[in-house]
Length: 230
Image (tube, rainbow, N blue to C red; front, side, top):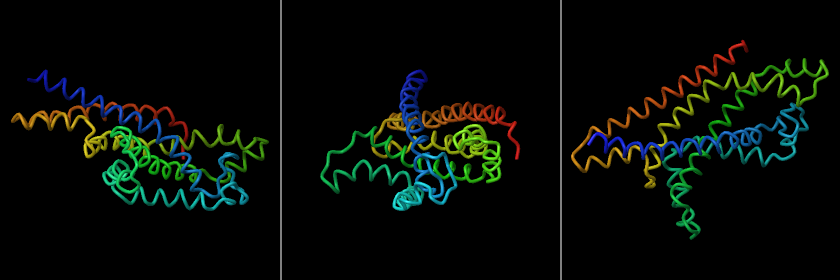
C-alpha cells in the first residue's frame, strides 16, 4: 500500500510541479511588464529613465490599467480568480471554456505577476538617484547604468521577497483542485475513500522537501550576491 500511495502522490506532485514551473515561466517576465506599466516615471524603452517626458507619462491609461489590474488581483482571493477565469468566459460571453490546466496557468501567472510587479517596483525605486547621476557623470549610457549599476543591486534587494512568494506558490498549487485539476492534495485525498488518512499527511513531506530545497537554493543565491551592501 505504501508503494501504491507513493506512486500516486508522485504523479500528483508532478502535476503540481508543472503548475509551479509554468507559472514562474510566465509570471516573472509578465510582472516586469506590469511593473513598467504601473511606473509612469520609468520608461521601458529608455531603461527606467526618470525623465518627466517618459513613455508612460504620455500614455496615462496604461498606468491606470496596470495599477487597476494589480489592485484587483491583489485584493481578491486566488481561488476566486481561478473560478472566474475558468467559468467566466462561458457564463458571461457564451464562449468555450478554457481547458482546466490552461485556466489554472492563466490564473496563477496573472496573480503572481501582479505580486512580482510590486516587488520589482520596490527594488527599482530603492536604488538611490545619485547612482544614476554618478553613472551619467562617468559617461555611461542609460543602458549601461541599468545593466552594470542598477540591475544586480535590484536582484539582490528583491531576492528575499521573491523567494518568499515563490515558496508560497509551491503551496498555492493545491488550489488548482478547485477547478478539478489533478495535483498532489487531490491524490492524497483520494485515499480517504479507502479509509486511509495518512496519505493526506504524507503529502506534507513532498512540500517540506521541495520547499527545503528552494530555501537552500535561495540562501546560496543571496550569499553570492552578498558583495552588494547597503
